[in-house]
Image (cartoon, rainbow, N blue to C red; front, side, top):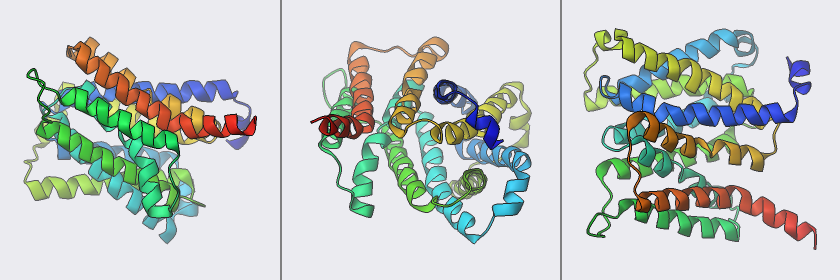
Amino acid sequence: MENVEKNIPQGLWKVALAGAAAIWGGSFVVIKGALDVVPPCWLMCVRFALAALVLGCIFHRRLARSLDSRHLVAGGVVGLFCGLGFVIQNVGLTTITPGRNAFLTATYCVMVPFMSWVAFRHRPAGSNFAAAVLAIAGVGLLSLGDDLSVALSAGEWLTLLAAVFYALQIVATAHFSRGCDVMVLTVVQLVTCSLVALVSALVVGEPFDVALFVKTDVLAALAYLVLLSSALCFVLQNLGQSHVPAAQASLLLSLESVFAIIASVLFYGEVVTPRMAAGFAAIFAAVLISELGPALAQRLGGKK
C-alpha cells in the first residue's frame, strides 16, 4: 500500500483533496434535505455508526494490530469535539440555508491559531489577527438585517458554536494524534461521534423511527454521507495531507465552503444577495489569510 502511495504524483493527491472538499461542500445540501425527514442527532448517530463500520471492515487488520488505550483516548477526545460540532451544526442547519451554514462553519479555521495560543503558548502570526478581524466583518455582513440592524438567528449562533468545537477538534488532533495510526484513530473518532450523537438524541428527547431511515430519499442521503462524505473523504483527507504540504492542503480543503454555496444555489435554490456575497467573500478571504499568511511571511522572510 505504501509503495503504491509513493508512486502517485503529488498532483493527484491535490485533486483528491479538492475532491474531498467538493463532496463535503455538497453534503450541506444533502444533509439539509435529510433533516426535513430525520431529526439531526439521529441522522448523525446513524451516519457515523455506519461510516465507522465501513472503515472498520476495510482497516480491520490495522485495528487488530494498533488499537490500544492511547488510540482510544486520542480518538475519544477528538471524536467528542467532532461529534459535538456535527450535532450542533446540524441542529443549526435546520433553520438556516446550507450556504450560510457552510461559511459560518468555516470560521473555525480562523479560531484554531488562537486556541493553540491558549493551549500550547504558540503565539498567532500577525496575519491571524488580520484574518480574525476580516472573519468578524464577514459574520457581521451576514447578520445584517434589511434595516441594517445586526442580529444573528439561533441557527447562526449554533453554527458559530459548532465552529468552536471544530477548532477544538483540530487542536486536539494536533496534540493527541502524534504517533497514532491515522486510520485507527479515525475509526475510534467516528465511533465516538456516533455515541455523542446518540447521547444528544436521548438527552433532547428526539423521537427515533426506523421507518424514516428506509425512505428512498433518506437512504440516498445516507449513502452519500456514509460512503462519500465520511468513509471516502476521511481517507482522502488523511492520505492527501500526508503527501501535500500543509499550506496547500489547507487551501484545497477550505474550498469546501465555496462548493457548498455553489451546490446550495444550484440544488437548494438559495438566493445570494450582494451583501451576503460580500460576507462570504470576507470569511473565505479570512480563511485563506489564516491558512497561508504565516507560511507566506516565513517564505518572504527567508528571502531577505
